[in-house]
Length: 405
Image (cartoon, rainbow, N blue to C red; front, side, top):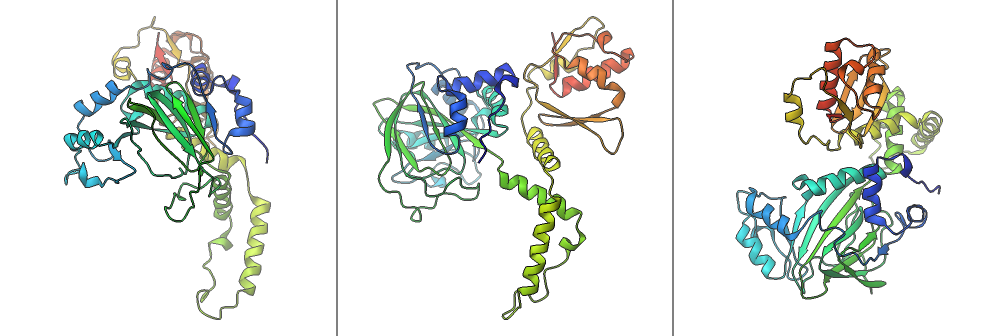
């Protein structure tokens, strides 16, 4: 199997910095050659404040105190005895804050799923990290009281980086009953034999542990202090996704594949021989016609559209009249793809975080100048009248691609 590395040098500085924060001093090339998706990696550091600016108990406390909380915004878990959702979620789906606090006092772990959706420091960090893997990065925040265990032994169906923020947790790693499970292959208690731990260690504040999907694990607070950690989950696309997308594209051009299965195929005594021959011909034709680039483009564009753009200050920027002397600059970590519009020759489509926009082909030199990284004013955009330049700048602002300087 070929091992692939992201071209870190070509990534925005923010992406390189975010990945270094997770992995340093571990070598990225070694990580992708020997670790990624195959084995765990503990990265111990003497740097207890490393992740404190991303989230804190105070930030979590403020979130619970000031937000209107509904099911899905806060969760609770405890290995024994387990918790039922009606212990802290009311009939109207509102979170009972007092019940949450009582459960926490009774050795239950408090979970803030997708906390980056509410907390900007974590949102900025996630947005910067995602281009390294071209994967959705989801966050869960876990606050475990002293002497408690949140989950029974289990595996996740996505790879995770665990960043210990404050306190410590004792981790136990077990075997891998399902190698690289798909998203739908969740852990099933009683089906997967846990056995004895294969490794045990304590994760201290500032440390990182990478755990590949399918590896069973559990953890509990280690000392007399609450444990706060961030779990970064990598929701990846697999080769299977690409192959299925490629097959779907071939099927669109093959009328024969859209025909019904043989009448009576589910009946006893159905002769599968001729159908098996037809299936083999389909497989051979798919292998001959399957494409790589178009299906990968589809997956890449869907990925970009699903990412959250950085639009801080967008209302203020959009409210200001574009003055002739106002200068702008492309956003340093702007993530976008340019694709020619095959249906409208000469035009091009720019897919960015959150969506896509189509541009007239004559505007390409001006677009390239705006995205060059150098400051510019409306008059610096080549081949455009003043109003056209203002319109282009307005569109680029709305997509989070440029900002005033």
